[in-house]
Image (cartoon, rainbow, N blue to C red):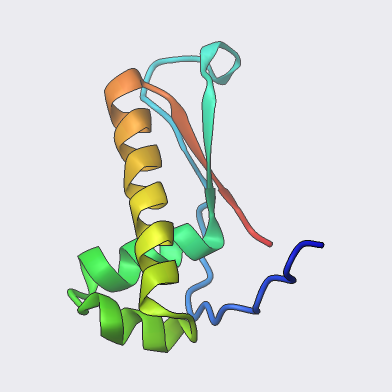
Amino acid sequence: MVRPLKPRRVLFDPSVVYFKPRAVPLSLLEEVDLSIDELEALRLCDLKNLAQVEAAKKMDISQSTFQRILTSARQKVAQALTEGRAIKIRKR
């Protein structure tokens, strides 16, 4: 039996949910899905410069869960940038 997901607090609602390389038609691009949780983790840690413990408290999750979310987000963004993929932000 799978443990149910604990609701996570996300205080950011992006107005733009899609990024793609310039001058490449969308039909030719592969996508990377970035969840709203992953975007919030990136925003808190890399943009707001919060420590992981503080950022985890803001999202109402444990620090180890925050670390897993942040690692996944950074890997996806790095993959999109280096391989020329589009980034699609999934809202719940």
